[in-house]
Length: 424
Image 1 (cartoon, rainbow, N blue to C red):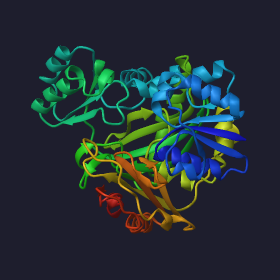
Image 2: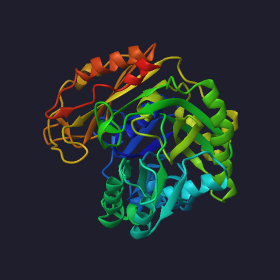
Image 3: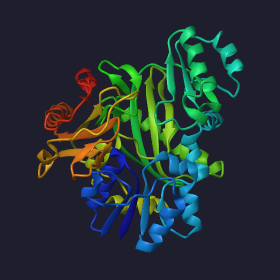
Image 4: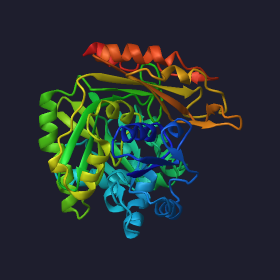
């Protein structure tokens, strides 16, 4: 099979690495890709939102399957476009991708179908939101309705912070059109857990759990980012939690989407909060998480292409997912100043250290080749250093050891990824 992966980050590199293990994978392409993905696939300079060019490329190269990694093209309708052109593609169509692209939709869906989540209100007018905040209990959570690169969520501890948050999202439009509508949500406390799943419209198969670290600084301080690191599995995701979620969250979500005439085929990412009242849904994503994919996919035993095709064909009930009985930890190496302001173009040294080392991965997120065939930084999140271990503690030690193999100007990382492991 010839495969095209759409995207350019660490998630897409992890997908490419998983696809490359399949005996079915004859040739892999990635649009637009990055310097790391180029070692596994032929990168082509087509943007993820250039649907017509992507479709033309697929026809020209006679590509058998396209896998979409990013949220924007899914929300924009790439699956609908490809299906009209009779091209095989893995991911939800636009009607189903709304599960992520509109937080207001997903909250209303959960309310209608009794799926556990935080209490909330939706607002389209800043004045109404400000009036509501004056009587609301603090802390409170403000969420831009649309896609905001994982940064459109503000946790406000005081009314003053909440007023400023409404201004940021709805009036100053810091997150663009995503802030035209806003969700104001009850603040939940507990452990966060991420659970990825494959879905074929009716059947759902759950992957191994993981836990992300969103804040930029140690101790979960600083601004929200796209993710500074993650580990899998989560020791807090117990058998009891799994049983509850399968019964009250996972299958009910798939059934709810089907009942709404929006059958979901692809990946559903469940962001969960393990509260005193039981697990509740924080958010849905309609694709692999990043960096969650960087610790979950390396542990998956299944053939990625077989599972993706089963989702498309509606035969996922014939597949049981299997994961290695081990652990993985990912430490993100970022550019100093991320997620606000940072410099690019620094040469990355030490990448060859990962060659031939079993259980160690260097997933490229923000990299490119300069004019002299050197790999340089090209983003806020630069690399995802992932390592396996027999236990989470061993995987964490291995990941931090491997993070020292790589150097570049303004290299920055958190030093407490997976620290919660010690408390489990």
